[in-house]
Image 1 (tube, rainbow, N blue to C red):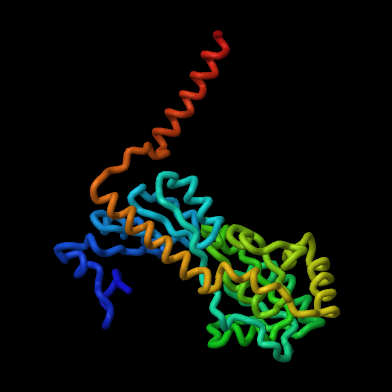
Image 2 (cartoon, rainbow, N blue to C red):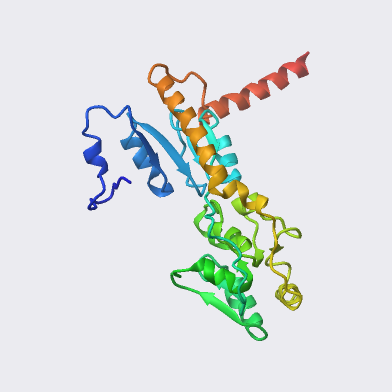
Length: 293
């Protein structure tokens, strides 16, 4: 772990590392979207990988920087925006302890205040509280998996939150954790949530037309409640047993790429604004030639 904003005890500081004579044996991984452009500029002479979560920050990545996308949604975004970069899918890990503990569930409905829409907070929750035991979490929880295991229905509605920032849901771990812990999940399906959520199959779409209709559907689930019993193979791509071999394969390819990059430059034209303009006029020109024939 390397710090870059301030020095921290027991961790190297980026400016000190960059004073070393030979960094060709190192690979730097940058992640925090807001700071990535500045870090890529600072590390321009080094081997760098961008670990991409949320998309929509507005910057581009050069072909010399491979991208690890935590969701297929994010991978698709970068596949269009940086089409000459190496791109890999490496989802977030779902630890083995994230599982159904088969304990008594005394919470009817659980909501985390962070990222929740005003609709959920101001309209849906007040109606649900009239009939059910609703718990709203607005602070850090030491054992969130324990809380999920005490819960029957989990609500997650992040679309409004991400629209405000012009960004995307990078992975959407809480709904997956809730599913793995046996909760019935009512969720939005924006961005990366659509990677694994399938309304009508493994979850329910929240904010469905009207508050009353949401209350009716949630009440039906609670009155006939059964734990979500998705098979373990549904979660297998996110467990370490499959992620570690995937990461090993990716690192092997990255080593090969950086060896190549040290000797050869990129010669594939990037889809810059100028090139898009060129392609647009070329397409118009081709159409006009056909009309003249």
